[in-house]
Length: 571
Image: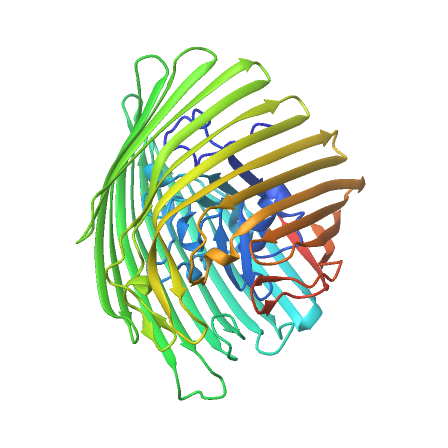
């Protein structure tokens, strides 16, 4: 019942850090979810507000604990995926769906572990590291002439293992100019030799989609191409610290056409490239104490028809330590020093305590500092409707949380209260509707809230999970705000995993959301599947209640949609 969360720790000893609220969606729950995109799975995980434009996660923003979509860190196997142009591209994770092993969400401050952007939390997508000789074929089709298929081959030849996958998805869209065409290719490999392991991976996600009203009141078009290459090495000597090193390259190309009716009019082309690497050492000290120490560096570059040629180099050094004070009490502490070229140096400490008063009852508390450097769009973008601000300051906040965890054989319950005191939060502000948006530092904002989580098992036939988050933001700008006014105030997620008979399974998911300036909305999604040997067939329905709702003002979300599909697994 107590999930393994590696995202809350950068140490070898998994689970030693237990002072933070975190959520995990394992592959078993992913397979029951009526979604085929990472954005959809993250929504069902709980603890995260996924605001989508369009269907099937074609363009989605992530928010945790009332953060902006820029204030959430995205990781893929430990590599930061946040785009230096804009957070609207952060969901373009170049990995095939078949390769995803689990999704972890660390709620609350993450800058002491991962640096800029760790305000609301961290979303970590982890791929399957235990490759076997296996062939998997997926397909589905349904409403709005939506069709998709994927082919994934996992292999193992002695010390060499890996996966090779390709996906294709197309749809006519649920309204005019919301069609899409997505292609994904990914390759991941690992070579073990003695006490060392070398990993090599490459992924690419290409999207061509209609963006009707996504960013402005026009029928628009957008094409994106996200690529990532990573080389990593791990050395585990028989004695002494474990050493890990990696180098990576993230590249994103973005083409945006504002008005389809005037294809020769307003258009943007952007190319961002992030190259970087890190080295860390993990080890033990004293009695049962653990530590991790590392350095990182990133070189961010942009070539843009609208923002010009930009470059920023960032470097950091960090440390994490965990130590059990007794058999029932443990403490963990982190600090991180970030250096940004021509930017203010940022020091972000964090400390947490966990105390087990009973074998089934644990109290935990944590506090720390978070920050985020402004991105290139906030600094330099300029058009008739939006003006960037090169004088923006980095966002900063002090964060704290406390709560308890109750764990029994078939029950897990958590309650957490949290507070984030922000300085210089960045938003886009305007005085009147006819004036352009201006990137601005808000002087102060306080976000306070609470969250509840409960999971109950009834043998192997039924699992019930419920989560609830309520929060309130103090900022009430006199001017109109582009994003703060759309902040989530309450969210409830309920799910049931049901085994009806034999291999007949069903997942039922209920979502209820209330945003600051819109009415509450609730909808029901479900997936039912039947498995026979290596074949699984399923039926999914999303928004069964046909609820009319908007994640962003002026962009209606789809009504009821049906999909049928199947999976063949050989090996």
